[in-house]
Amino acid sequence: QVQLVESGGGLVQPGGSLRLSCAASGSIASINEMRWYRQAPGKERELVATITSGGSTNYADSVKGRFTISRDNTKNTAYLQMNSLTPKDTAVYYCNADIQRLWSYARDYWGKGTLVTVST
Image (cartoon, rainbow, N blue to C red; front, side, top):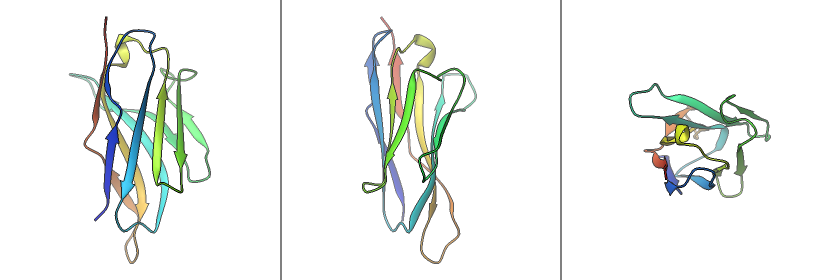
């Protein structure tokens, strides 16, 4: 079985920074694209950032210039560095990854999420 576990969420003041981690474990042949999503209360789940296995990145306009997605392929871990946080960034942040297992088609896996609250 493959598992994704997020960590690093918490309470932070406006203008502050936070770094989220997403660790993948299990019987993994390769990890293709990794992604961060977020979902605020009463809102649709939103794609925040993506990173390919080769390191190419894309960002939602709302976070461009403030957030940085990265990955350490030796640790099967993705990160999301969040700077200049505002209350609008408050959400549950989810890790998502396209993972290939042996003798199986690649498919998406989801973490359970980590809560980020930006408030005075």
